[in-house]
Structures are given as C-alpha cells and as structure tokens.
Length: 169
Image (tube, rainbow, N blue to C red; front, top):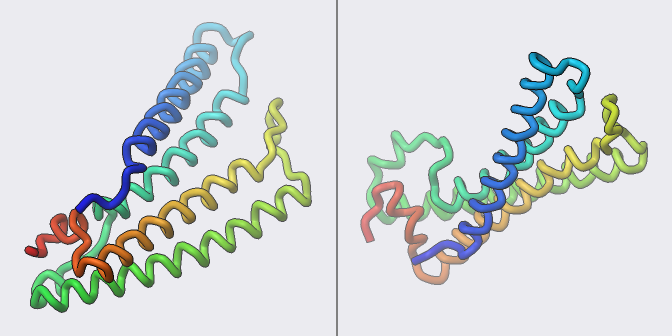
C-alpha cells in the first residue's frame, strides 16, 4: 500500500531548493575569494533560508517512509500484533506532537509578522518566512502521521512503514 502520492513533488521541491541553495552558496564563496567587490552577505542568508525549507519539507518524507531516526530495540522483539499497536500509537502521538508544534510555529510566525522582524542583511528579509519553514514541516509531518494512522485503522497495516520496520503482513 502506498502512503502518499506527494513524495515525487516533495522530492522535486527539495531538490530544486537544494540546487538553488548550492548556486547561491557557490556564488557567495567565489565572490568572496575572487571578486570581493561583488561579495554579498545576502547570498549566505538565502542559503540558510533555503536549506531550512529543504530540511523541513524532507522531514515529512522521512515520516512517510519511516526513515527518520527512532529506537526499535524493544519494539522489534515484541510479537507482530503488539508492534502494529505500538506503530499506531506512535503515529497518533506523532500527529498530536507535530500538530502542537505547528500551532506553536503559527504563533511565532504571526508574532514575527506583527513585530515586522527583518533580517540584518541588505535584503531585509522578513524573519516570518524563515519561521514558516518549521510551520510547513510540522503540518506536512502531521499530515503524514495522520495518513499512517488512517491506513492502519482502515487496513490494519501501514504498508511501507511496517515493511521498513521488518513487520511481516
């Protein structure tokens, strides 16, 4: 069973953002060493913003494919039905945790807009756009945890997630 059709889009988006960050980073480095009069602090700032967006977007794919870091030492030794129950419980807790973090991130973003916080570089980039990366990542991860929980309740299995943990159908 497939978890979601959004994976290809996420991969393309993260790849594009990563390439942009690499281009800006290369420009910043080359300008700093070979053309100091063209060096700009804004390029380094853009690299940081782009990388944060890439990291948080890719986090939801890690949840969907169960490739994020987790400890299964005890869970792996339990009977299959208990492994499935704990996987469902983990998905439910993951959903609520990510939802709470998304709510907190929303409050931070709104406060940043209200205070009109801007970066110190020449770009004067609104800090809220940087903060939005956490909000987007948490919403995407909450969605993935919800998908896993729904699939488990509907089918009694979560397909790739169980397979990645070595739980046989």
